[in-house]
Length: 431
Image (tube, rainbow, N blue to C red; front, side, top):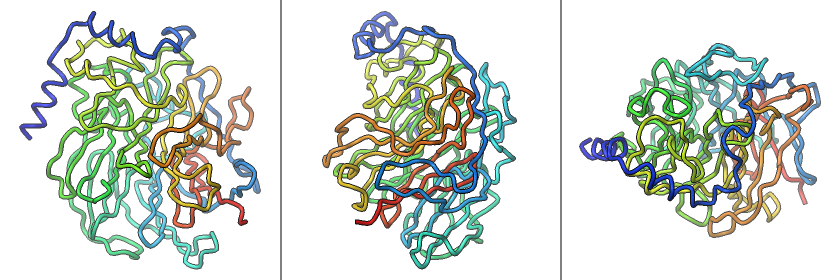
């Protein structure tokens, strides 16, 4: 605990010269970005109309898209167990639509089908391998806005918005009835703008990483109110060794390990209020003790709106690796580590973009693909993979909004659509 306090003290209170930091960060590769407020900041909520019978998103030639399962209550996140079961976390923000928080409107659609958070996990089992789950039931309930899930040893972990819990678990069981154990508390509170908490284990299973978003847009109530937020945290499976692993990540959600490397990657939602084309969300590798800028710096530029002085750690700012578009709300991340898709997709990253609510023309609302090489490095430009979520762009009508993407044991892709309550399956055509 002393080490945590020491790190946070340095991060929050060791100040450097504003002018020196500004000069250094402005010399980065940020010149291609527009100036702040080049366009007005918009509130442009999409209107969700759902999918008609037989309608599906569109994948490239050679792929088939089907409904894997539907009739959920805001299916947000997915996890595959060792025996191939699919776990679906059903949860949402619990904010009334269009609620104003910290000067910003929260609620990303005119018709989001939002109800009170279901706060449960559903299990799906496709026992005969025909692509249709024959078993469907409640796996775990009475949670608090669950998202990230993880099986490690004889434990099942779930990240609620305010804590990580674990439960005794054996492979193949269809429900959890036993009493859980709280492993660690997480920051939440009444104003909990970025409520999702994702978790992932290290490859050797000795550490668990927790993605926690900021409580506001740009530390609106001061950086002290962002304690343990805008971070990826690290702990041992029993909750010991709890510390900040990387900081300055405004809202990291999806996390995965790049094939061919031992490098953690995450997708991050950047800040609002600077115009249509600021600030790009990004995909980045995550370095231990790395600082990625929030709230003071974005893509090498100083955000003059932030009132708190920059700490000395700002001198160690790390520029993100890959821009994925402004206001795309990029959430889900999965590296393709199977072989059923064509070779061009091997090792690459699939990213689910939930879509904008604050851009004059809708952005996101699709799943994109970014090629990586066998050494775990980006190796090409992003391309659209799963589209068709936008129904009528000029009328802001959308069929749905993708959130999470995972790779299944058979090499297919599963994608949650939280506002139309569907889990989509994308399969490669058999050769």
